[in-house]
Image (cartoon, rainbow, N blue to C red; front, side):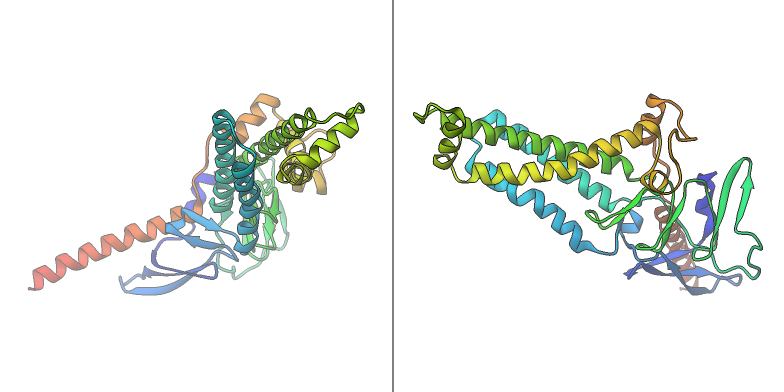
Length: 317
């Protein structure tokens, strides 16, 4: 049961994030607070586990800029109607919001365990019909569909891939936001393309050329220079993101991950439960974060210890 895996550690966080490791203090058998170092791999953990970022924030900032800069230019130079302005802003906010939500959400990290005294003799086992593999880095039996990401140095539930645009893993807990980002960005690109084409057609109607193609390009040369530039840019983005959008939509419907599709599952997925159930599995319900559960238990234990210490001090005085 994945919900029971939050009991891996007990303790208290001491508040600082250091390259994916949080130094914490936990009471020993005699009640003395001792230092413990919890390893979250290359990920960066903030806000008691509510924000979990990948190892490279620069790629995330680059992705946000690739959407924001052309969008600002589009709003300044080409948008003239309030309805177009409203729809553009909504699509932009959904696109960037889902990108940031995907990048800041724990993808489904399984907490590492201390190295066992005796290493398992076999690295695969079958538990209730589910294949589990031993991770020599995290020292855990990985649940089914879990893989170790070498970029983040963590085992991730329902691991899909390590995304170069978000700088983090895509897994069980943030895959829905990744798919939402692909869909909203594709719709935004289509919308901007449509407005740019409409601008070029409007400009071409003012030309006197008999040939429609010549009239179109002649009008393009006389339209606002930003229209053809943004049209070419958004068509390129649409080819890249739109292709990914179609690919991941097919993965959602067939209940596959990119890792499974690329590595070993060809044809029908053994996890396929039907289109609607597969979609529901991705978009409905959310398992709690082990990272957040660990750090919140630390904070709660610390508050309790401080309260007990305050009571003892008051009794002494």
